Image 1 (cartoon, rainbow, N blue to C red):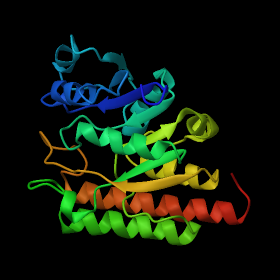
Image 2: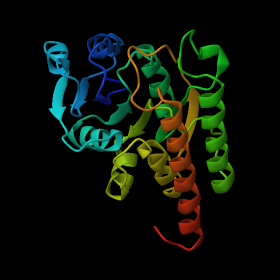
Image 3: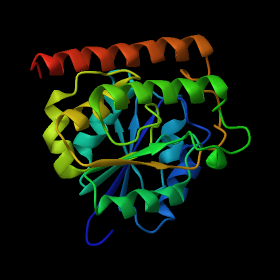
Image 4: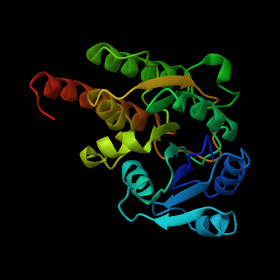
Length: 239
């Protein structure tokens, strides 16, 4: 619990068999997390065995995609505060406390992985990914006149249940660019949000998206197109 509010952590998993158990243990060790929901999104064989006995609740989402998995996890979560994180070893469990500290003043707390001093040795945040995420985030910030943004791709963030309830029916993206869609919905709903720097470590295993420069480039293009089209819709009063 955090100030009498229940905390749910949602771990979407596809290729995190080698790291899922340690991630669950690390996040529970904060003492603040009440439940962890592992969304098995057609995950690697053996993933369920790693989750078994950890105290996390495993559910299955057959529709493939990061967005599909997270949306299912949020529907299943029972907490007052919903935290997303990828269980691939990149995020530090204790950073949950950073998110919670800001949740008292904000509806949504986004993480950023672009702060140099918090990027660990070996982390997959080289020049291409760091500048790409920063540039697309600045496009969003500029087009929508938002508070400071520096990372559209950070997959650790917090939403109050009241914020989630206001945007949940407008989710449309099932794939990897679901994160920016959520950010845009938060902005358009005029929810109070802030971005804070998080630790970013080396991934255990290879990402199916950011591990491939070409896939990362395509994802960045999709994010950019989504931001521009959403701004145009806003200008013409289209939800």
